[in-house]
Image (cartoon, rainbow, N blue to C red; front, side, top):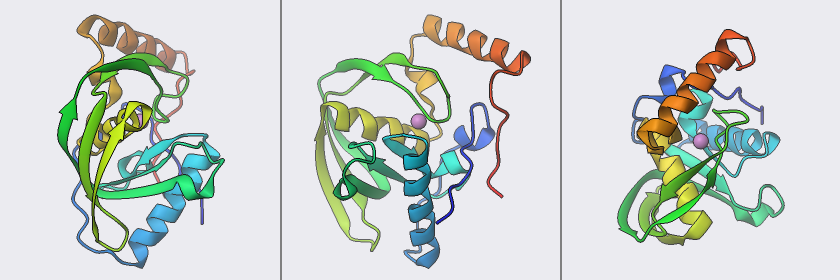
Length: 177
Ligand code: NI
C-alpha cells in the first residue's frame, strides 16, 4: 500500500469537481487503501481523492487521527442532504501545509454516500465530524477551504501563499506518478 504524493494548492486538480464512482472494483480498493495510508502518514483526519490527483468522487476520514483502526471511514459519491445551525472552528488542510484558519460550517448535517461495496449510507454528523465531512465534500466539488473564508481573509491568505511560493517556502505542486 504505497503512500501517494499529496497535491498542493493551487494545483488545478483541487479546483475542478470530481467524477462520481461507477466501478466498485479492486482499483477503487487500492486507491482507498493508499489514501488511508497517505492520510495517516501526514497526520490528517480526512483526505479527498483529488488531493492525491485522482478524480474519483470519494474521501476517507479518521477522526481518531490514526489512534483507532475502527475509526477509518470511506464515503463514495457523498452528497449533503440537510444542513442545520452554524459553528466556527479552526481548520487545516493537507493541501495547504502549515495553514490554519477559522472557518464557518454547519453544526449538523445529514449526508448520503455509498460504501466500498456500493451500498447506500445515510448518516448524521455533528460538530467536528460535520466540519470534516463538509471540508472533504467541498474538495470533491473542486472547492478549497480558502473559498469559505471572508473575502478579506481570502485575499490576505492568497497574498501570504504567493509570497511563500516566490521565496520557495511553499511546496511545489506534486503529481501522483
Ligand atoms: Ni483539505
